Image 1 (spheres, each protein chain N blue to C red):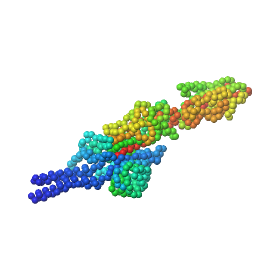
Image 2 (image 1 turned 90 degrees about the vertical axis):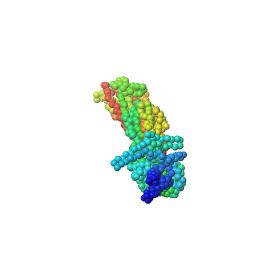
Image 3 (image 1 turned 135 degrees about the vertical axis):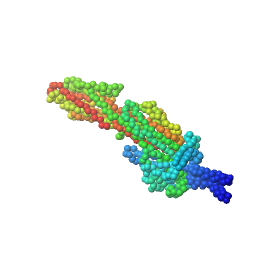
Length: 380
Length: 242
């Protein structure tokens, strides 16, 4: 009986203690850990000034392993004076129950971080980056800090894993070193992201053709209309008049450095007899052995056509080359450049090459011929 | 004997009371300037562990529906697995965009996709940072204002919706079951494209389950666009507010 009463007392005491504890302990524990929740908190990853992967583009804010800036913006609600703000980078938002409190995101490095722009509660000039993953900023003395604040940490090396979420636990403290009770606290999340790589190819283009004539289709030079064949002079060679002939060529390219067209071949020849090539630019002179050309609309003799469409410096950039670009002045030298596209791409244009022949009275009779080859070379 | 039973009942009540303590001490807050929500009663309700020396099981109950509720001033997540910790999952699902060959006679298009899960947030925004494709010193012209595809004119633009012109390309955001989000203004009109580095291309005004976005890329070139390989690297940045 005594044993029963004794056990009853024990049970009663234990039960009463348990009930009292259930009522009292919550208030005790709550009051000991309560820190105001930081609201409107965000972490923006801002591109840096470093080109880590040497692709010509500075590291984007979410680039894995990129050296970037982390801008924290949030609202403080605690009224207590604040001396320091603690930033802790972790792989989890909160401590893992019965596990490790904070795992450092792989590759993250905050040891070179510097404090950049700040707003709201300002005056944070000190920064402690001794421990990787932990950044403490502080000011010389605690002061009021409420409302919206923003702090940018520069030169932070992002976690190296692509598409990885990481968390930063933020807490404010009255102390100057991030220790002691938290005034306000909150966690933000951010994520690295695989860079999106865009690749496309613009095919290199060069369209070039020659012929006696070249027509157009819908006002665009059309090489399919080029007429092959021999170019005949308009008259028999004579010391009293100039014989002329023309041929045409069309060219277009998207080469970044444009094209150059050269003329290649010997002067007019008949057996052992030749007509002198005009090694230097000159006008047409009757009774003198001359074989020359240019790419202009000439008056003396009246022959030739300007390049069409004409050079405009935008999409039509083909033009006659030096020595072949003056009306009524002619020249012929094997290998000379006779046209170019002003070191850039150009839409198709038609050049008209004008040939002149003058002969002296002693020019041996015969049929004079030559084969000229035009070579268009584009530089991409 | 009755006194013993009564005492045992009191002990039982006491034990239950003590066991309930952890629920209240885990309380954390979800709040906005005008609202504060104690989440205790929403979380931790559905996980039941049973065990014997040779057997252990864990089941979750009560998850017939989860989701969010909100008004202009507050929001909360319902379901037995909720938490007020931020949870951001941002994934580039197809980051290798191949256009193939450009031609002045027609547009070239391509797509990439990314997804966002941003839980217990008040919003999120996705920015795009980068340059148009370039080849050496030549960069394809970015579309600084919204416009349609024009063949034969240099253009580089994107949007995040389904298009029918210049071809059927892209898709509207896939909100799944609990996703919230939309293409941002300027990137939400079918058949209109734009690209301005640093702009927001997608956003949501509240917490969101998985949303999959498809970026449609448009490239037009002209006949003088220099030949060669054009490349660009773009970075997407998702920023959540918690």
